[in-house]
Amino acid sequence: MKNGQSVSPEETERAQIVPEAASELNNLIQIISSTVVLLEKMWKGPSESEEHFEVLRTSVDRAAKVTARLVQHAGGTNQKNVLHCDLAAGAEARPAPKKPGGNQRCILVVDDEPMALALSRYVLAQAGFAVATAQSGLEAIDLFGREPNRFSLVLLDLSMPSMDGEETFVRLRAINPKVPVLLNTGFIEKHRLERMMDAGLAGFLRRPYQPDDVLEQIGSVLESAPA
Image (cartoon, rainbow, N blue to C red):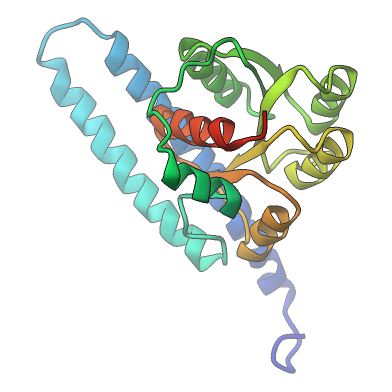
C-alpha cells in the first residue's frame, strides 16, 4: 500500500529495476573512468591523443551526471563519499596524504565484478599495498576468518549475489571488529547507508570515483584507525 492505495506490479518492478540499473551504470562508468585514468598515465603516444582522451573524459563526466540523477530519483544517497564521524574528525585534525604509501599493509578487496576487482588491485598495488581479493561475500568471509589479523582494511562492494555487501560487512565485524571496512558501490539507499554507518562502517565511496579518491579515503581511514 502507498498512501492508502495499492501498488501495481509495474510500480513494484520499476522500484526494483531503477536502483539495479543505477548501480550497474555506475559500476560500468567506474571501470571506464578508471581505465581512462590509467591509460593516460601509461600512454606515451603523440600529443594528438589528448583530443581522444578529452572526448572520453567528457563522455564519462556526462554519463556520471545522468546516473547521479537516476540514483537520486531512485532514493539513493547523492553523497559521493562519507567517513564515519570519528574518522572524519581525525581527518580534519590531520589531513591524509592524497597518495598514501601502503607500506605493504594488506587490503582485502571484495567485488563480484572481475574488471573492477582487477582495477582496484592494480591501483592499490601501485600505491604500495599488499592486496588480497575475493569475488564473493562467502569467499571474503573464508579468507578473513582464516587470517583475521592479516588485513588492515577491507574495501567492500555492496551489490553481490548470494551474500550482499551488508551481510558480508556484518559477518566481518563479528570476526574482527577492529578492521575498518570501506564500502564502495554504485547505489545505496540513504537509510541503508545510515544503518551500516551506525553499525561501524568506516566510510563510503559512491562510484564512479577516481583512483586518487579511493587512495585518499583509505589513507584517512588507516591514519585514524586504532593501532
